[in-house]
Amino acid sequence: MSDTQFAAYEAKCTRASALAAEILPQNKKVLFDALTTAGVLVVTVDFDGSGDSGQLAAPEAFDAENNEIEIPAIEIVVKVVDFDTGTASEQTTTVKEFIETLAYELLEKLHGNWEDGEGAQGEFRFSTAEQTITLDYNERYVEYHHHEYEF
Image 1 (cartoon, rainbow, N blue to C red):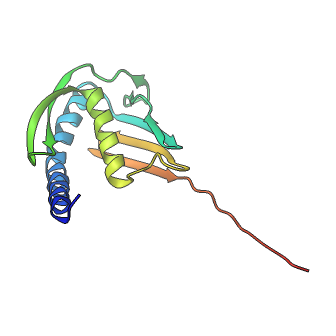
Image 2: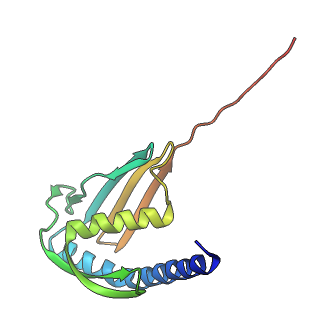
C-alpha cells in the first residue's frame, strides 16, 4: 500500500468513526424507546475472548423487578455507516441484532483486538432508565518475574 493509498484509507477511517459517533445518540434513542415500550429496564451482554477468538453471549433482558424477560422481537430502523462512501443510511434490524452489533462495534472501537492473546472479558449494561450503555472491561495478561543467580 502506497503512502497515498494509506492516507486515503486513514481518511475513510476518520470519517467513518466521526459519523458513527454522530449517529449513536439517535440510534440509542430508537433502541431505548423500543426497550422501554417492552418493559425492559436493563439488558446485559457478556463477552469473553482469548487466543484470537472471542464471542458475545446472548443478550439478557430484565424488568423493573429484576425478572428475566424476552427481548422484544420487533424491528427498529437505525442508521448505519457505509465505510466506502462515508455516508449514513437507514437499516431495518431487530432489537436483539442491533444490541449485538452495537456491543461488537463499541468493543472493537474502545478495545480493538480484545480477543487476542490472553484476551479480555466483561459485560455491557444497557440501562433504559438512565439511557446509558456501560462497558465493564477486564483485560487479561500474563506477568513473569524472573530471577537468575550464579554462585
